[in-house]
Image (cartoon, one colour):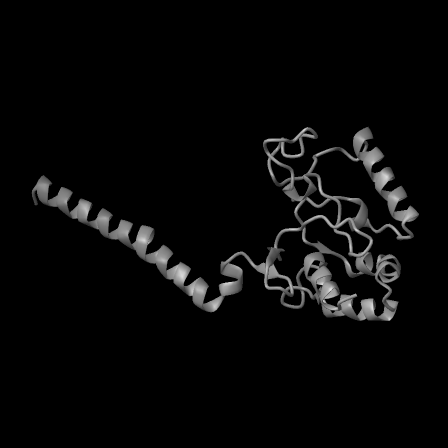
Length: 200
């Protein structure tokens, strides 16, 4: 068999594989995602009662008002800093990631103490996830215990009965994946959107 024939066969095989793996397969996966999982494939975007997009169910965002359940702390302020104006160097190491500070680091100890004091002054029993940041700094969830710790503050600010907020937390608590993996969590954005839907 000649070299030219072998080379031609290799080139044709390469082109066929390229078409399959670089064009056909990705397009099939995009179509499958749009048909079977459109919400997830399009970024898990959540909307408010007016139908406006307010965020993704996968990315946390800061809530500081007493009228809302607060998210856990973030080393990047949930990447809300302006890259063109970032005096606190929030985005210095990128838009996601932990602080990588050792447990004995004075800066970390000071931040934890300040956060704990702020929570206690607000009448909130500090929980680990309300004091410590997540590994990604973009975690959209808090534990049900952390959400319940904020009920009194939110109920007072909105004039709602605490048991109504307790029910709201239960309705917005995600269970373990497949019933066995991970721990139950409350998506803070979903919870706060449900809170706004009450109209108080």
